[in-house]
Image (cartoon, rainbow, N blue to C red):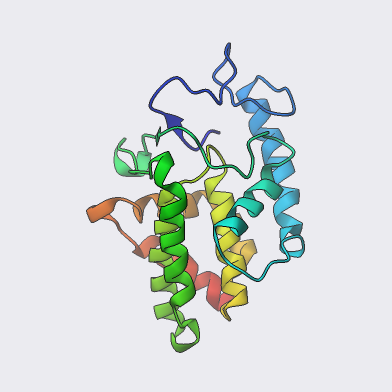
Length: 209
């Protein structure tokens, strides 16, 4: 259930079990995964009405994460403090090269500047999907949080898309959550990145939205 693992002893874990410290006091990984899924499903369902700011910046991303995970993790809405790696099946066991903790805010700001400078109204659906894919994958590769990066960043992405005139079908993205995460991994593999998988579902989501 942890979407990343640390390069060192993980201070986010309980001392006696490799499970994320949580406000529910759960020390069983499967039980925590189920509880997290149930709670975050409800949070993601109504989050669009809870984030009132029209600004799409790093502060907004932190607020999204805080809202989704605030009942589960004390550190929700805060950037991670440790380097992260995770062997990925779709990369043959290799890991995405995530941002180091001291560069997270800067790297997020760099991507968001590109997102906000793009004149999205001038792009057709295909070009929008392709460009959006590359920028959202770049943002996801920063991996600002210890857990919950995909949910927070996809929520940020769908809110951004709707505010900029290319609403995405969130139901499709949620129903294809495993595919979306694998596609993000493939699109975040440096010089070997493959964007077509993420572009396909983004384009489908935009057309259905």
